[in-house]
Length: 111
Image (cartoon, rainbow, N blue to C red):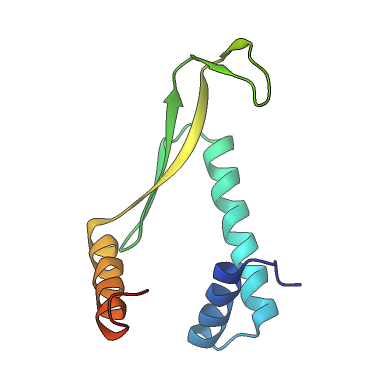
């Protein structure tokens, strides 16, 4: 069952093609990979997971902050919490930017 997200579906097709898997197998492996990252970051005292040539999942502390609730005018305090962010490696970021520039060049400045 593919998710209704164009980028995700294209990713699964590419992953299946590169790995010589069915799309269903590619989706299963992707879900397992995501679950393993989620479990590792939440169950162990580590602050990041480095994936060579791609980037890092990093746990960071978000400070307590004031804000407003959607649709209401009252100010509330959002507590501090841990959040996960992904930071692309320099190499991966450069490769993605190169590919975007190449597509723009081929399409007359339009992605």
